[in-house]
Image 1 (cartoon, one colour):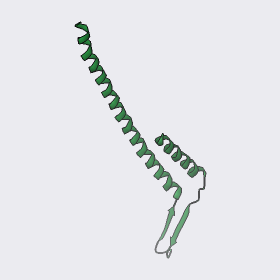
Image 2 (spheres, rainbow, N blue to C red; image 1 turned 60 degrees about the vertical axis):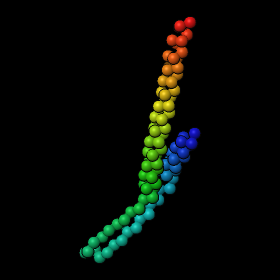
Image 3 (cartoon, helix red, strand yellow; image 1 turned 30 degrees about the vertical axis):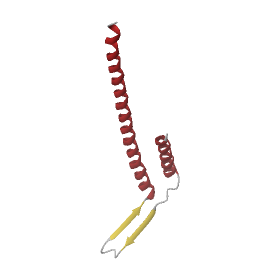
Image 4 (cartoon, rainbow, N blue to C red; image 1 turned 180 degrees about the vertical axis):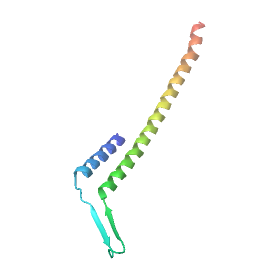
Length: 95
């Protein structure tokens, strides 16, 4: 349940980021126009979205690993049960 609730919280945060406050901070530095001009634009919304996407990918990878681990355990239990059945079957047929 923890995985899905954190996924839901991330999705809500993305929606709030996309449809919420779209303010961007602009820092502009100008020097003599004959020398050079530079402009730095910092957009916190895009930074936050990138962080959320990276976190989402990490959680998806972790969930896949967990699913593979559970699948392996289930296959092991099935093989053990099958082996137990094979060990019991010859004994019961000898009676």
